[in-house]
Each structure stands twice: as C-alpha cells, then as structure tokens.
Image (cartoon, rainbow, N blue to C red; front, side):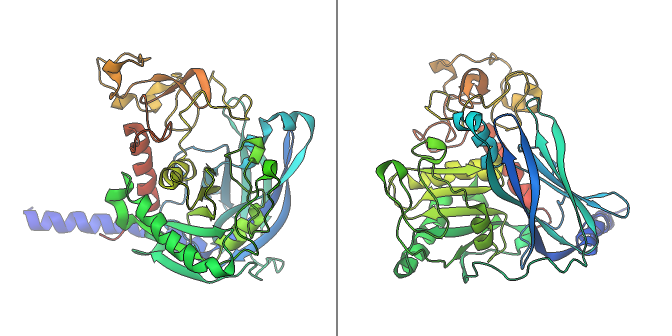
Length: 431
C-alpha cells in the first residue's frame, strides 16, 4: 500500500469512527438544554434532595462528543440513562455551595435548604436522571432520581430573566469550544457600557496566563446585558446592602473575601441567555473578593488591583476542579478532606494513590515527600500543605497561582489538568 492510499484509508477510518459519536448526540438529544431544579437540604451530617421544576433552555453549549464524564471530579454527579435500555447517555461531576456549608459551625446547629440545578442536553426520549453524592470515604452514593417524560407539558418554557446577549470573543461552534458566559452583578443600567468594557478586559486578562494564552481559539466569551437596580454588592459586616440582580455578598459562609450568591436559580436563569459551559459572575466592586465551585459558577470583581489573578485562580476551581493549595489561611471551613483517601482534585494528594495524580511529572531523584528547600524551589514534587491542611496533604510545587499571587504561573500539574479539561470540551474541533 503506497503512502497516499494509506493516508486516505486512515482518514476514512477516522471519519467512520467519528460518525457514531456525533450521531449519538443527534439521536438522543436536541441542541438545547433541560434544567432540573431541585432543593438540597440538610445539616453537617445529613442531606436530602427534593424536586423543584423542569425548565427548557434554548441553548446547549457543551460537547456533542464527550457526553460521559471521564474525570471523576466533584462532590456530586448527575447521570442520565435511557429508560428503554438503561444505557448511560450523559454524565457530569460537579460541586456546590451546600457541601462547603456542611463543614461550617452553622451546619452543626441548624439545617438549611439550597436551591440547586443540573443542566443536561434536552432528551428526545424518556430518560432517568440520577443524582449522586460523594461520601466521606469518597464513594458516590445515589440520593435522588427523576424520570423525565418528553410528553410532560409542565416543563417551563417562559424564559425568566430574559436579557440580550452579546459576543465578547467568539471563535467557533459552541459544541467545539469552551463557552464562558459573563454575568453582570451590581452594574446599573447606566453602567452597561462599563460592563461591556470590563468584559473585554476580562478576556484580555484571561489570555495573559498560560496555558490559556496559547489556546485562545478554543474559547468563546459572551456577556449578558442585565442591569441591577443598584451598584455594587452586599458587605454584611459593614451594613452595606445593595439591590442587585444576582444577590451576591461578601462574607459568604462568614469569610470576608468569599464573594458568592445563594440565589443559584437566578444565576441559571440569567446564564440561559447564551450557550455556556462555565458561568462567570463579574461583580462591580473594588474590594478584594471572589469564589468558584467546580461546574457550579465562578465569581470575581472588576476593579481590584488583583482582579486578573482573582479571575484566573477562581476559574481554576470552577473549570478544571483545582483545589486551593494554601493551608495556613483562616477559612471558615471545618474538616474539609478525609486524609485517609485520595482527594478527587487533580492538584492535591494524600499520597495514598500518588500514581493517579502527578507522580509522572516528578523527576526520579526528587524525594517524595519533597522538602520545601531552595534546592527544590522550581521542581515538581509533593510538598506538604494544601487544601487548607498543613499536614497530610501535599501540593505539586512550592508555589502556584492556586496557592499565592506571588507569581503569575500555574504549576505543571495544574497546567496539565487545565489542558485535559480544555481538550475534553473541545473534542471534535474542526482543524
């Protein structure tokens, strides 16, 4: 077989193998979304899920190829099964503010209810939607299931919080890009021009950091023109209260710089105006703050001197599932990790199964655990301290953007995790 024939044969094989994957999406799903809203309730030791609503959303921003999650990240999982033959059609891992709240002192005293949701491609056939929760030993346990009937006329189609979307930087088909929707928080109607400018700055800042800088053509950014009645955001300790569209607040979980919202329903309603894989809430504030939770949402401020590093650090949490690598911070979390098992986050390890993490990036003569000395300052190893734990948890390097803002780079382990996630969302990209 000559070179030309071999090349044609390989191309035909690739095309043949790709067709069933694309066909699976169009066979089972419409190119729009179904949101299952539910209530997540409990305290520090218990949780339960109850049904809220079904909503049809006009866009699906996710991959048409990688429908089943392969990362095993997140404290929770959604799985979608074909009712006819019980085959798995779609899955995603995610985390939520509820799980973080469970570790606080308040959760030991009272129970609370959080409004949450999962968004899946809209099914063409009846499906069973299952929700799983990761227990203390790292095992995913089924907690809830709902059978969706395509003939259900109670699916809501009256799009709430409908506002115009605009392109900030769009490079291609949402099915082949990482789609980020930027939501304005605390921008008044008169400040929509400022929000548009801030979105452009957001994209510019985003691409000053690797590995994103070299992968610009794999991302789409869109903004939503949704004004708030008042400017800014809440600062409870300073008795500052603002009427805003997404109800964000500093002092979330009683941590001053943790800037989040409990109003997840409004976040989803506003994000539904554009195709998206990730939601980024841009808050009109100079005060240092932000936050992000894996496949939940990301938050950053528009005008702090550290805004660029805040946005890229938080996106590391929300998009790639990266953990905080600091360990001496005064967080309000209680016991966050079981040190007897390997955490799911890709950039921290208890060394229980280090071979599943970044051991392949460690040079042979580098000791594990690795001393935090000058000799190993620029080497990948396993340095004790990470994930809010000073002992028993290890991070890849002495410093990284997931630890401090002293530098401007992600460590090789974080970089690898980010690239893998980008590749997952952009599978099938036309070259």
